[in-house]
Length: 130
Image (cartoon, rainbow, N blue to C red; front, side):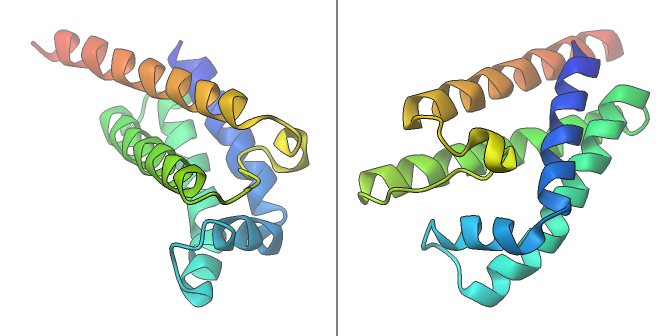
């Protein structure tokens, strides 16, 4: 399961890394951060996702990758719900144009599924250490 979750984040990160300006616009649509910070994140976050996904696949720095991805998906879920509550019609940007026409509930379901998978992997990882 860690390979599948890692591959999902590698793919999502790669899609965003190839078009950071579009991703910066997606970040800006949330109306949470100033444009300059959003642009910085658009160039940084995709590579962080890719590296953390690789950590899961290769099982190198595994717990660190799990922790970072769990925090990122948690922040993203909170930002998405906050945007919806404020009535913003946003494009997630998670998977580039592939996810452009997904509904809010589809985005949220995928995010919660990924969060559940990450928490499951953290629990399994903790048991192995004990």
